[in-house]
Length: 508
Ligand code: NAD
Image 1 (cartoon, rainbow, N blue to C red):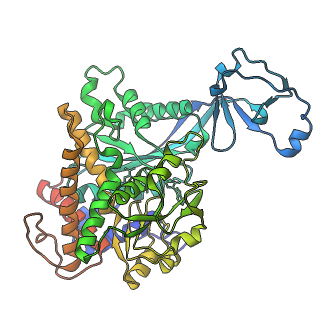
Image 2: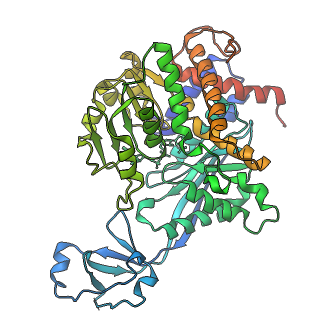
């Protein structure tokens, strides 16, 4: 391992599990080299024209313009609010408006004083890391977030290679996105950015080449823009719907995809509970992140009778010892246009607590479903749970892992726990190839079987319990001694990936 300043970087850190599992199974050295670094690292730039903005004046600045007459803006919906307090000024706002402006400042009743800032061209850094494709086309999410980097995308792309192998779907691994805070841009700007991303990357994408999906900061709407940009003008464009997954069901998306990652996590949790003789009805759960994954997992567990006692997101935490009203929280976060950051903050049905206190809420299950490296050694010391089920990618640090193991807190590792999303993405892709539409019951039935089977194999590898049941056969995967469950998941992935190299050989 090459160390920078004597410390491993994020990618090298994440690859420690890979190297441990590779050594354990005596992986062929050439296969190990093939998997150690990504196939391709694409870094490029996308430009868009940003719209004019209304930027709120500070208190001091307001003093000089307090006598400025208010302007009347009739098409009020043409002022698009952003999470940073600014408004995007769409030109139709000026139609029939009575505008009073002084040195670029405008007074909008009920909103305040704003400085008009001219939009213009802006450049954003974009990435797509294609880690490996020996088992099938590159596959992985697109993230729009301000804290992204080459190292992060390399880590997440490699995770996808392991995850698609564990889920037994014929894909490789990739990940990418754009360095941006999407909450500070208008829908139209995000649309243009997404179109531009595909315009630049089109030659490396395709239903049999590289298939993006939603991740943090992206959703079905963005997948629709990407599909349109990729297929527009193509002769047989209906055949290409599988170029992205996670689409709206009305345009070729799959039933069950929206909740699939959360549903897959719940199938794992059910199996864990069955193994421990633990009743999920009445179980106390804390969830970090209330986006696609966190809210789905909370909704499903809530309908199963568990109690979601605390939810933390980037802006705050809500807590209710008797259990939060999950449908009301979902409405507050996801169906409330005034909640610009889609945050649990301000939810009336719970008490705000600090993030520090969130981690020590007395519960049975902790589900991190936000970003990486949240469960550090310190946080793991504070947790008062029996299980950590990793909905997010890479939420637990190495120190966190060590503390969880020492404290005998069980773990369901990310590469199986959140594999439900990519599994149903595969079902979506299959439906697109066949121009079919499956029912939600069919999708969930297949998903349940796939997740439970592969999780059972992982648990057997961990316990060194080779066996064959009607559901699964763990005999080819066990390594002759018990291993921790994260290593066990990696062993399953590597054995399946290695088989391709060994059986197909290498073109020289
Ligand atoms: P999302 O953008 O829908 O939601 C992210 C959530 O995390 C938001 O609630 C946000 O407030 C919260 N968050 C962000 N930074 C935080 C911080 N520092 N502290 C606390 N909360 C924070 O994203 P998502 O699609 O739900 O993805 C969540 C995680 O699950 C990511 O790690 C992602 O890679 C992983 N994942 C997603 C899918 C999928 O299908 N969407 C599949 C597999 C894995």
